[in-house]
Image: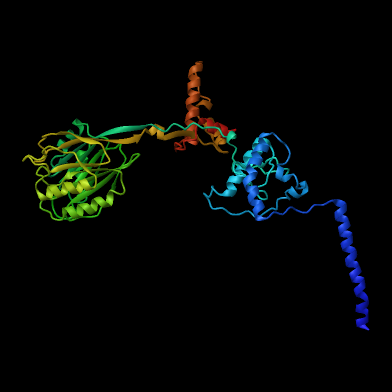
Length: 475
């Protein structure tokens, strides 16, 4: 039964296929649809040789229709389909010379000049040598090109106003006058050193060989001029040695801790200013070995912490005899650390240069090497400059009274107990005297219950903060 049914359906299927092909041929003949043109290899080569001359001849004639070899192609076959969106390809930073980048730049230029773009580089690639704009006449439907807008990262530069820099506090260059003296016992030369400090108008006096013991400060009570302070570093054991510093109180100084060395004695005093200055007083007893190695370690430890360093002291090295190994090695050592030795004359009665002044980051000079008769060493007077800011510019002083809820009642009670409220008070008809008494009594009461509070405020160092910006911030 099944083979008979299948044989009966075959004529029906064959008839349906014939009907379909007949209908398709009728439709083609009715629409007059031409097939797509096909070319063999030789034909394409011929077109390649002739299309340039055809195109330029046609272009020079000013024709607005399609080129000759496109006339037989229906317009709906030459229409470019809608651009298929493709995935954005990542590009490494700095890769700006690719083909697609240049084509997009050409499209952007054409769009800016004409307002619309008439070709698509994805579907039609130019075969004519020369610029791609020669194909702009083709009736190709291309979606409008999105213009690239530069984003300012949320900053509107037109809303920003230039701000003038605030004036920086002026810095004064202070010249410090100092003296280096080998005293050889400070105890019996107090008045001589006091007179020397005052007469020479010194700011600092560096003393070596004070010969003081630990805790012995009695000689400084007679040595110190008015408004001066001192730092003393006596030898920890044995006799002799010891160093000290005398300075005026207008300079803020502090003594620093230092390690002990076997070849020399050292005292560290820091002068506080804009760039702190480290003053080091050195005394090296004669015939002590190991100076170069220990002094090199000492320099490498402090030179990293300060930009301005002053070394003064009695090194007991004949610097004037540069042919001696110790003097030559010592000069090479301080030169390697960029220190400058500024003493050029003899500082001892026998004509040798033993007392030295070394500077690092400071401009200093020796003013005089005088003979004062204090000891067998001659005092070395020198000057050096440091930068300091004026105190009134660096800090502002504010004074005000602080009132609370009890101030009014306390003032009333104190005024009632004053002499102005007593029955025996008589101003004698003089109004001016009464006004003066009233002001003095009220000021005395306020000073008692609400005295002035003084506060120092450091000036701001922000360059953009000035009176104009403060006013704008308040409003």
